[in-house]
Image (tube, rainbow, N blue to C red; front, top):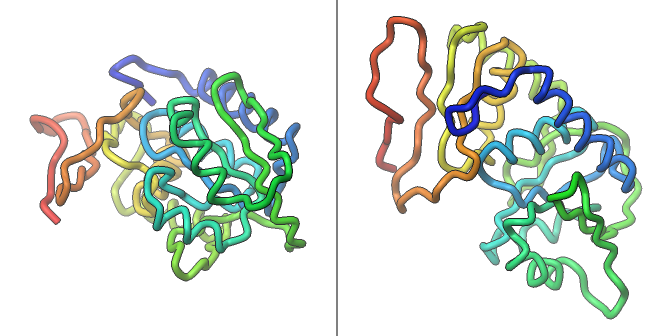
Length: 224
């Protein structure tokens, strides 16, 4: 992958994923745990998404700045809430929404720049991870299903080593999350910014696939 145009080789990225995964597991995150992921964009999203897939956790994307998103996620019995230090200004308010009562809330510093909040649903679950893309329904798509679909996407788009995919805007949507996995599985290069700027209302950034010989002037935009 590349971050702000600077290449990050596979070995370095894999080490970062392993480091974050190990820290999360040391704090109690295990296969089947429901993790509210409060990261939405930039290379830190790609990193956390890979780490949680490696652990086989159930990932629940949450917008920490959106009360409706928090309300829906709260009803899904999360075990942990994971956020980056860039969200420290809203994290405390989000914690108050997830946890009621006067009990102390354990907050772990993970991989130096992430906060892992134990929101402690304490619900017994079967093991196995996945993704809750639709907070309203709460349906969990299993990790195996996601990997199979990502493989189909990679084959359909013709991803292979040497192909670059530009990713921008919010990355915590199901199509983009599958595309991130497809890039990794097929050896394609994902291009992301260190911190993506928010997109304008009604405009969605569409990933651009760059192959040798293809000409394009930049990210494509589609008006919703």
